[in-house]
Image 1 (cartoon, rainbow, N blue to C red):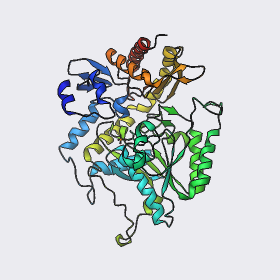
Image 2: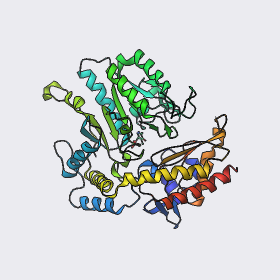
Image 3: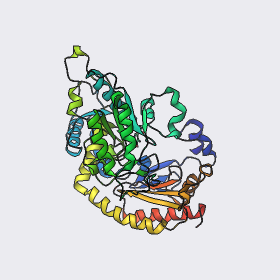
Image 4: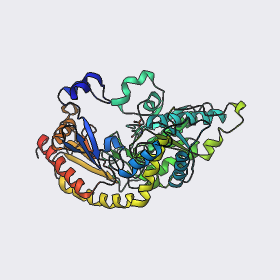
Amino acid sequence: MEELDLKYIWHPCSQMKDYETLPPMVIDHGEGPWLYDIHGKRYLDIVSSWWANLLGHCNPDINAAIKDQVDSLEHVIFANFSHRPAIELAEQLAKITPPAIRKFHFNDNGSSAVECALKMCFQFYLQGGKPEKKRFMCLTEGYHGETIGALSVGSMDLYAKMYQPMMMDNIHVEAPDCYRCPYGKCRENCQCECFEHAEKAFAAHAQETAAMIVEPLLQGSAGMRIYPPLYLKKLRALCDRYDVKLICDEIATGFGRTGKMFACDYAEISPDIMCISKGLTGGYLPMSVTCVTEEIYDAFYADFSEGRAFMHSHTYAGNPLGCAAALAVQKIFREQHILETANQNAVWLTKEMAAAFGSHPNVGEIRHIGLIQAIELVKDPATKEPLDASKRTGYAIYKKALEYGLVLRPLGDVLYFNPPLNITKDELSQAIEMAKKAIGDILPA
Ligand SMILES: *Cc1c(COP(=O)(O)O)cnc(C)c1O
């Protein structure tokens, strides 16, 4: 099977030559946080299969909901037509999203939800008599997906730099960098001094800017960089002052990953647009929603002849199977007190992580939010000097961890846990043990 795979398949986000030494793990089945390959070896999926799997693999309740749905309706065109699962899901989303969010535009993956949000903001101002507002602001090290528009509001060189000539000319605002704070502050005692970069950018560019897009509180792809809610609060106020829309990309942070339903909730703000995907369906099916305020929706509402409609569609928008999975996820959240348990386990996990890794000479910082824990490896914690990236230490640890049965896929030299929310303490302890061995093998203390 491994040979056949390499004969035909080009895997995402991979240098395929690496597969010469690390062939693909061909997974036969999954259960909870565990993946079982065709040779019977099991792996603890501590990264939730790219942050999507929210409640374990082959969750019996989600499986049942999808099976039930597939026997009545697998898919239907979503223009002019609708169906019960989508309607119920939208009603449910209205209950759990921030108060100003009122309308739900369905798409079929995270990047498309972001593209949709950008186009909406541009069109909002175009139709509102401000055609000069056609640029976007974003944070450095931000990540919002891989399509050209989404890449244009992303700032990670690894994914975006090469495509610069194809991209929109956006405004990149220096992001908070709490581990290496240039102001010498820490998350607990700062007033977001770094917000001055946003203030300067708005003063210079707000009149030509339609929206600012951010990953609230957690810049995931950047290496699980965590910043304080105060930054978001200030950003909401700044956007209001300058008439710029605020897009919160909750694709990675939504559905309890940060310990609250949405990361925005920590700052008690309502964005103008919120993008959700990944955990939305429990990580089962590709679905996303661009959630908007009444104000934005109303700006498109007119007689057809006025040409104000949002003519944007994706074939699988509102897919009933995805909606059924998402409804099952919401039911599980309510009935099984997922957030409460996850938050209790998060407190425990934070202590365990500190005990297991805190004194290692290459651990610069262990940061956490919700059940997410990230270990930033450095050459020397005193200077915070990064490891030599060309040594690919994180990747070496990843390969070692796989031998022990742990999927510890890193972000550069940042190792992280982002497990399903219903993982048990025992499983987390096993993950720590395996991670400890793998780190010890590559970076002996
Ligand atoms: C994963 C991710 C995306 C892109 O979603 P895809 O479904 O992979 O297109 C966008 N934004 C954030 C914050 C993400 O984590």
